[in-house]
Amino acid sequence: MLSQGGKEFMVRIRFFWRPLFQGRNLLLTNTLSAGGMLGLGDILQQSWENRKKPEKVHNWKRTGHMFLVGCSLGPLMHYWYGWLDRVYAGHALKTVGKKVLVDQLVASPTMALWYFVGMDVMEGHTLPEAWEEFKDKFWELYKADWCIWPAAQMINFYFLSPKFRVLYMNFITLGWDTYLSYLKHRDDSHHITEISDSSDVDPQQDPSKPLEEKASELQCQSC
Image 1 (cartoon, rainbow, N blue to C red):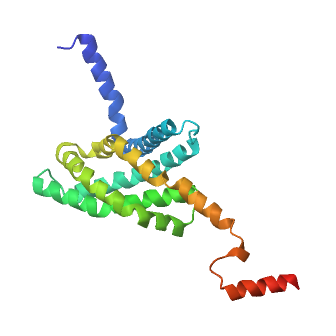
Image 2: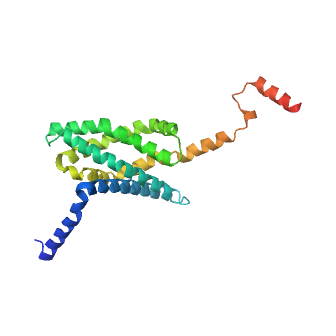
Image 3: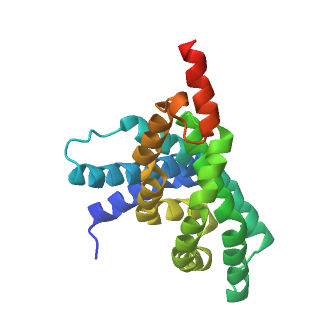
């Protein structure tokens, strides 16, 4: 049994947290928690990268980009789950199963696209480049998504109150957010090297040119 002081403390905590899950504050809570957890996932991923390469310095700009993309995903999840709860109301297993299926088929690909496009745009890439990276990595991401999220969403939709859905998602996804950071940035150095190498190619040594064209160019230069 709690003492009188303990009960008073619990009551204060309850009244402190309650406004964060009411009205417009709920949208703010969902937005900041989504950004914070995605940023924290990137910090964990970069810490792992730095352990393998001690000379590497933490890229706080990259973490900031992850935080901002997470904040942009927060409102999407907020309104998506609100719509899902209105269309598929109730906690019956059949209803919960429908919600999980719709979430996997609609929300998961959409938010994956939003993540890659948002990150690439902030990193200075074009939309076609973002689309190419999304296509290249989507199926790997989506297969992993199916291994994790249906079970997590069953718990979410069956046991939790709607106002806690996004917060639950954000805190349960710390490992997933770390994986998103890994998947997004694992090929950066390789991609940059390829671009640098291609920019250093001498047009006169382009192997794609026929030998006759190369010979004629050399003759012109000697004239």
